[in-house]
Length: 399
Ligand code: GLU
Image (cartoon, rainbow, N blue to C red):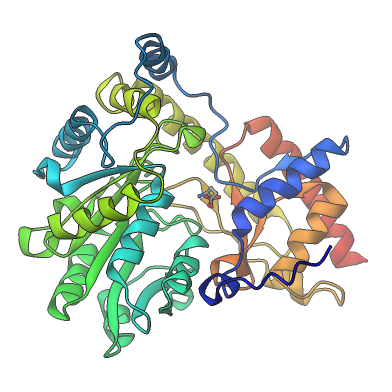
């Protein structure tokens, strides 16, 4: 039935999330009875650790099931402040913290409270799919900084070269989803200096903060010196760090005035993040960190298997990720080697149909000629997926 529904302009020009679409495609195939090798969404295959689940059970038993302050309880704000202080040495006060329903809500609130229609927002590519879509929602323009020619490493000079009179915000995501690149702390500081010198603001999405592989170390914008931190919002999430994607718990720390506007928006949209998730998050941040170490060990083991295995496949070249849990192989030679499949989106569709491997096309992240492979999945699935992928690509190249 047609309804003649015409969406608001700022929504009509948005695209749905391609990372979530892959999740859905894999689910559809599974429901149709197929075995799916799901390397699509960045979602840890681990269960939420027991100590965190117990804290949630306790919250329910004690009837901690009502509204909380929109920005989160005093206790969770304290846990976040202490966690950041312990990891970075930085001090924040409770008015500089907001807790949201996932990192995504934090980032949404951050952008819509800062950005006016017509503003320019600088986004290094490849980027997480959601950044430019929220910028579109805010009626602003994404100015994409292509980092491919520099091995996906962003530099202060690149940021400077993309400044416009309308630039207002730079979004940084290190470790990066999807490239796995980590911005070196010295370069991070130089980038922040460009931001401050030009009166921009910095949004640092640190949802993979804990996931770096030696010799790289976690680095948070919270550790920047005060005059740089004064124009920086740090966004964190428990989804990946503690395998808590479904609990929807993220947070931001930053300038008090910016945070206050974010709380205002949140108070009229979702109100507070779920009360039970807040209790669970306090345990996650302040309880034992053993499970995090185990997960990181396992991600490293998978990475060490996956990257050489990908490089064995004809036409695929993949550099080693420095953080997060994504491989971002270059597949340009595969695309050039056949007449049927010319784009990363076509290749992702082909692998799904031919081999039931779910993964995401590089074009979704603003960089054509690549695929994103999430290795937040078991070693067994990874190994079987690599076998299937090898077969399917050989067939394509030879066929
Ligand atoms: N952030 C993850 C990803 O990139 C989860 C899906 C999403 O929220 O985009 O796959």
